[in-house]
Image 1 (cartoon, rainbow, N blue to C red):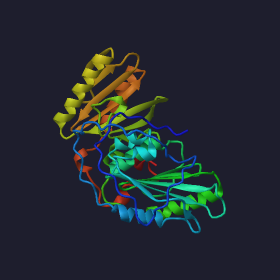
Image 2 (tube, one colour):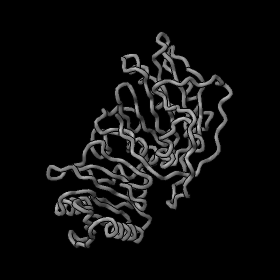
Image 3 (cartoon, rainbow, N blue to C red):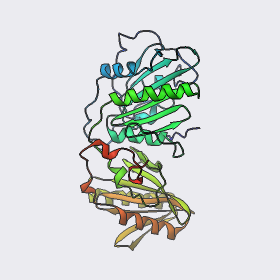
Image 4 (cartoon, rainbow, N blue to C red):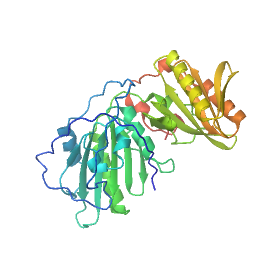
Length: 359
């Protein structure tokens, strides 16, 4: 079963898009679809204080609907109506999971179902989420995938689970869910996915954390991005996490970029306060040319430090010395964050055979 992390933060909703006039039949629910009836909308939470970069150019709702409708595999037909949702009514389609997408500032969802020509029980459900930025799209992709699922050469990154596909390209996150695990479902899903990815635009905007997070000893495909509440801490926003193998142990590390070195130091102060309130103790240790906060959380240790505007650390490590050494090593590996804002081409952020791009 796919692991879906929870979040308790929401974003302010916007108004709902009207359903497209060219596709007016009612949608037909099925056992694998996310549709649930009688759902109650989640209440909006306060506006985030984190500054968000301007949204990159996107397809209009009509253009996106045309792309989805036109991606049907040959001889497959649209089942029911194409639907579009905004943050305000997203819960009507994916109740119970809308909060997760809202925490990543989702702009909208376009949904369509396609049915096989000679098998009424075989269909593909297509979800195309507009996440506003490549970082948000990578974030939702990263928390929905499993490191054990094989990568697929689609978009900037993709993976397959049985006959289902999960794809990230630019500001879009695409899910293709098959009702059956058959060769026909796999082939049709691959065809549909390729058509979608060929039609969806991308930009040169780079997801900086994919390159900034150190790669030595990093577990492949373990990199994740949290827009809010990383590690359950409300002050850790816009944070990347990844797992590393050190001394035979799996260790979770985290990396966040603040607006300034002073802002990074403020995060360290909050972390220290958190440790003293909810853990046993917090002490400052100078090593490797930097000062680290070593936090005893009651049997496990968190260690955190700053490097310019960056906050780097490890969490939940049983051995204090290993926690401090790992945090020290990771800090030394960080490159100058001022040189990693954007790349000249989106292909620099695609999956590759190197761990830098987190295949």
